[in-house]
Length: 282
Image 1 (spheres, rainbow, N blue to C red):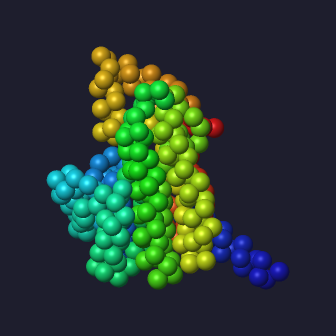
Image 2: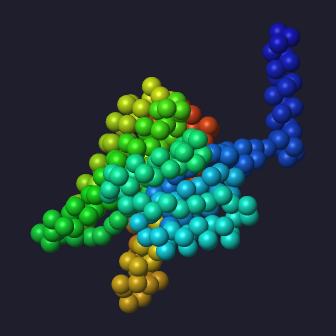
Image 3: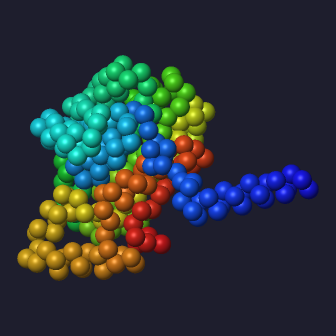
């Protein structure tokens, strides 16, 4: 009885303190002082992730094919985030040797890899009768093969240290079908089932694997898509109208979910497919 009374007083005091603004969780407590690799981190969701992780004091390493874009992305992060620790390593995720080289470089430089975010991806629409073998392999190689072999190489380093987190950026198109997107849907569906398989395979080494499935997000790729229409605002309104929330997402909204999944707050989340899509797949 005394214990219950003491507990009630404690939790009651904590609740009152919370209401008075005296107890809070600092953002820096979510995830800080970790080493994070982000593929495709030079624009869009990947760049938003870089700035979010760098803002919490993490070592951020961006991987990408285009050195100029990579260095510009690092410069952007350094200019926008005070004290940011951000670097770039050239890496074509379609090439297993590039993946191995990048993983080893990061492990050698920092001594550990806490998180990998597979954000590199490509999107285009094509009717099946118009799909060439070259375009098919392009979308599968970047979206799925790249995710597969980057995970393979980073997981080997994470196994040595006995911990790690991997988050794969998939898509709502990996959860349901999209018109004229058969190859893209296949690539993202593969990412989701690969995520579940890896969650089981890597769990004995305390490595968690999850995927995030965004709907349409306002990225340079989306802007390029909207630019094809005579009236951008009309096209954007039509795109937004199919979402129950009446809008498309922002890179920062996706980055917030990824940060959570990489944090200790998500320590029991493994093999999950997170829909971050304004309810379009509900």
